[in-house]
Length: 551
Image (cartoon, rainbow, N blue to C red; front, side, top):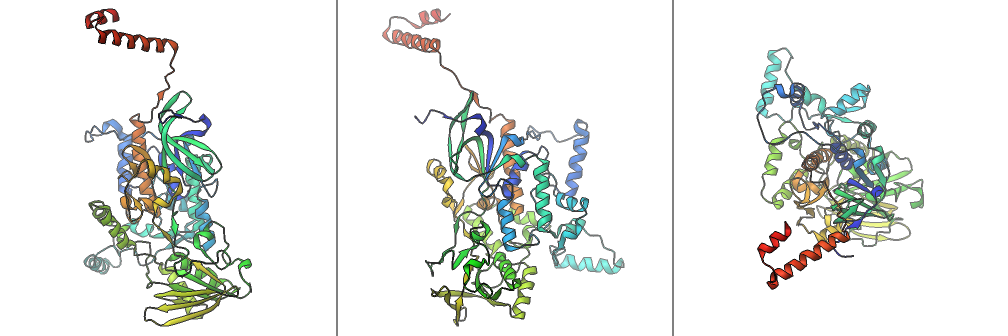
């Protein structure tokens, strides 16, 4: 087959767009594409102004502009979501939260996937009388004010006998939803936009940008091949593959980690390849001796679960760095009242290298929130947990179905841990978009720059200006900022992608051309034209005779 010949796709396997990944990012993008009036980035005052303009329509004196602000939404049947974990949205998310037994999200109430209303989850909780499933994030409200502003607030409190004018948004937003509440709310979003039948369980193995023919239409689009042998076609594609990449396992100190009998990575727990504290991995299931290596919230959550299990005799949590306590994965000023100042400074940086550095400064590696810090301190004091800070493993030996570990702390002191049954590595995933197998063809045929493992995509989160392949989530960090891997980044990324795709649809850029069928008369006409050109070149006829002949 020549490179210019279109690839035939059956109509049943063709759709407008394919989203790779059915997690929070995939759901955010799918619901945003199906929303005609997105408003999740608006504040309460902006919502009121938006609805006021909408009710009055042409009667209002709005600033004239050539730009059209009406949206051309997609329908659920136009989209296909392919997820390797399940045929329902957030299958991987659910498995991860169940493995770590996480009762509440780390994110506040205004971080969610609903594209229509920033206060949607708060409304959902109150309408369904589930306010008791909200946990307050203490010591956050008011922290975005300067010391001078806080002083004025205290003075006002005294002058008005305890009455003070506060921003109710600051009060109600800094609550965290329960895991079940958030999951149910996402289910409500799926139902509202009719997306339940738009997702299939399969694994994408290759994505290729080619000329496609489907029925009587043809145009440039994507050929998406899956593990099951399916070949799909679409006009645009979105990579929402989550935290996939190179896992930090095994560590260089132990190239033979004895997986899965002696150790595993947290990704193996989340994919159900290994069960946390599974009986089959322990010589004495009633007296388990485990070590958890990490530094982030996941390691703290696993340690808390292990400390509550009566079959676990010893739990040792090893942090390579100091303890970093933060409410979120990033500093508060990225989500608080004046977050736009921080985000504007990020967007104005001239190079991807500078953006990467700013992101690193904001996230500071792994951190735990105050809730789990208190839980771990309680276990530490009770003797259930041995918490080693600024300590690293320098040697480990597998002998007699157990580990003998040698560690060293910052002071240079040696620590020995003997007869350890199992090691859980909560060491994260390296940023390396090039390690995603299904993107190898795209990198070969349409290469783009990569900075520190992240793709240098456009501000619309597009692969490049000519190819409608989009990236959302962790791999969009150079364009979205430190919150890209969180719910805030999922919604912001979905808004950029949704706006751009809906505008392209409005401009007719996805309108493919009918396939031209070449007939015998067309061939004869082409031959006559060729003969006329030969006669003209040979001088047997001139231009005037040719024009007269055409009449």
